[in-house]
Every structure is written in C-alpha cells, then in structure tokens.
Image (cartoon, rainbow, N blue to C red; front, side):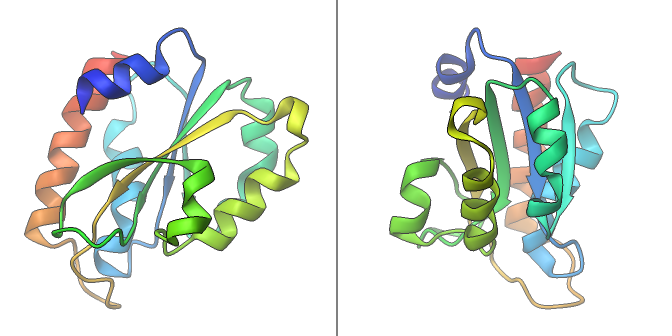
Length: 153
C-alpha cells in the first residue's frame, strides 16, 4: 500500500482528514489516527469526527490539492483490511458509514477549487456504541500510523 499511496500523492499538497465516531467502536478509526499523528507529520491534519460537512471551510482554506480521507468503511472484507478507494466510487459501492456526508461535503466545494480525494478505508469489525477498537482494526491503525509517518515526516 505504501508504494501505491506514495505514487498517488507525489507532488500534491495533502490534507489528511480523519472521519469517525470514537464512541462507536471501529467507526472511530479515522479520528483516532489523526489524534495519533499530531506533531509527528508535516501535513495538515483535520479530525472531522462524524460530521465531516462541518469542515468545508477548513478544507477549502487549507490549500490542499488532495484530501486523503481515513474512515471505517464496509467494503465486504475482513475486519482490519485496508483499501484505497477512489472518491468517485464511494456512492457506487456505498462503503462508508459517512458516505452521504462525504459526498455532500465535496459537492459543496466549487469544482474549480475542489481538491482530489482518495479514501483510505479500513474494514470495521464492529461499530457498536460503547465499544473500543477491535484488535484487527487497532493493528491496522498501528500500520497506517507508520505508513503516514514515513510518507509525511
């Protein structure tokens, strides 16, 4: 995944956007990643929680030419699996627990100022209220943290 992601982001101004609700188990993985990466990477970080549409102004003003969205997404894989998903494919496969919000978020930004987007999706095990991260997703979170530190140190 490192090589594919590196090739996709080369020469781009990146904003890393974490999406997720920490009180809903694995759904919070994107938010947890942003918290972990604070002061470890040299790209702007934004924790959108479970309301990414509230971040429109920050995304537009960031100057990013690409937004990497990290979110739990059900893409019919094994819990903890990671996939890079084109934003245009989000609605077709209905992967994110926040897909409607993400679609709205980027449609509101005028096309001539809209950054490229790529979803770094983590297959959740459980999104039940009151549960922490599953072991599989926690392991993926550890791996993603290492990848992003390598990419953005």
